[in-house]
Amino acid sequence: MITITDRAIEKLQAQLINRGHGIGIRVGVRTSGCSGMAYTLEFADEARLEDKMFKYNDVAILVDFKNYPYLSGTEIDYVKKGLNEGFEFVNPNERARCGCGESFTV
Image 1 (cartoon, rainbow, N blue to C red):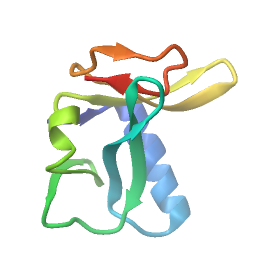
Image 2 (image 1 turned 135 degrees about the vertical axis):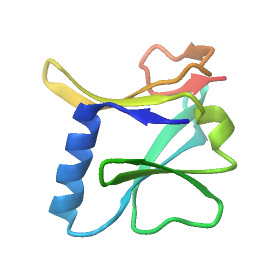
Image 3 (image 1 turned 180 degrees about the horizontal axis):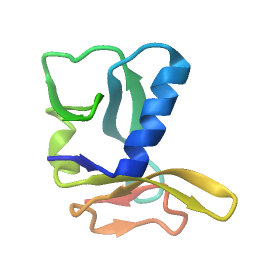
Image 4 (image 1 turned 120 degrees about the horizontal axis):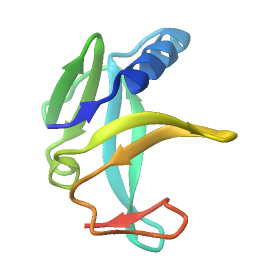
C-alpha cells in the first residue's frame, strides 16, 4: 500500500484543478544519482492495466507492478522547509540515501 498525507492530497488536488484534467499522479523509480534510484512523479490522466491504484478522496496514486516492490509501504507527504517545498517520500524499503537526498538504495 502507498499512503498520502492530507497536506499532499490538498496540494495534488490544487495542481490537478490548475492543470484542468487528470485523475492523480503516477509514482515510480528510475536509475539515477549516486545511490542508484530516484523517485519519479508525473500527472496521470488514466489508469493502465499494469497499475495498482490507491484512491484518496478524489486523487488517485498509481504505481505500475514493476515499481511497486520498491515503493510498497511508502508515505507521500508535502513539506515546507525554509524556502524549499515539495513532495517527500518516507519509504521503509530505503536502506540508504545520498547526502543531497535526491537518490536512494534499497
